[in-house]
Amino acid sequence: MEIKPMAIVLTMLAGWINRWDRMQERYIAKRSERFEIMVQLVCETQNSIRYILDLGCGTGSLMLEMLKTFPDSKVFGIDFDPTLLPLARKRLGSFGNRLHIILDDLRKPNWLEQIPESIDAGMLPKNCNNFHRKQF
Image 1 (cartoon, helix red, strand yellow):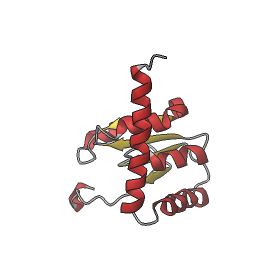
Image 2 (cartoon, helix red, strand yellow; image 1 turned 90 degrees about the vertical axis):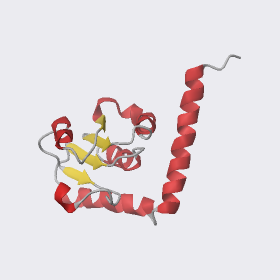
Image 3 (cartoon, helix red, strand yellow; image 1 turned 135 degrees about the vertical axis):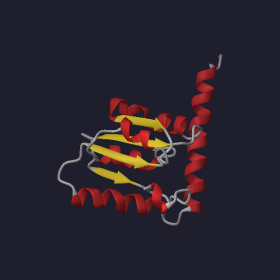
């Protein structure tokens, strides 16, 4: 049986996603519970969810929860780490055109051009230590 290179890459990506999630669970206390609370807050405060924005989306862990919970929504994830975004694409590829993963730097204003003008829910699941107050 011949192993195809793409199958090896996909297996490796799945392994990296699992390792990333385990590392984040150790690094961020009660990470899963925090995601559940974020999803619940959006459910309880918004009547209609069309567009969701995840700033610093990483491998797409929070985006996954949003896409599952809001089946009629489109989710935009932005991150400037080019090594994490292929993992997000692997994790979330089954959501097709509901998923928009964007490589960009939030410190530069042009990232706003890549998202809808109106966002129904915005997520910032991690601390943005790299930003100065003036940048927001």
